[in-house]
Length: 174
Image: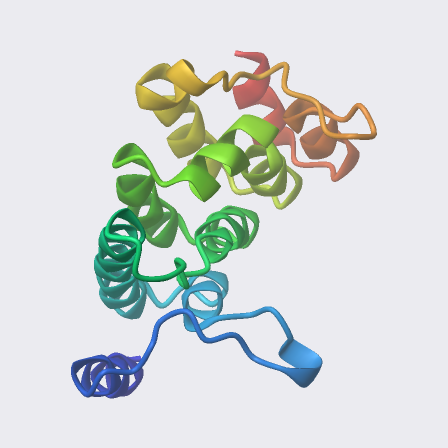
């Protein structure tokens, strides 16, 4: 993983864009989503930092009337849910920092309950704990709670129960 982080650092310092998405089999995936999905925390930190800078530059350009924003902020939301669903708590916490700074895509993922349901369905109790702790703090302001339901009416408790993750179920009931 250190080699990957070093390679990403080299590419970013050479001006590589963070918002480029893959085509073909991995269409829609960016370096941000891949790092979160596979638990590459140090690489994710570099990418988040670069993406936040890129967003700031894009906002400055928009405010000055010089163009359109190009950073795929949805990649933040997708990365957040992938980190939660795959039990990568350090990545999840890294992305929570971006969320606490107001990243809209991550705030949307929190509000929708997808990240919490993904962590619960995967039996990742530590991720459930981290997400609910965030809900007590900053995320409470955006309407996050245990009663959030997906489009099919499922909650995190139902997802954990259906998948047979007793520890998650007990935590969610507590």
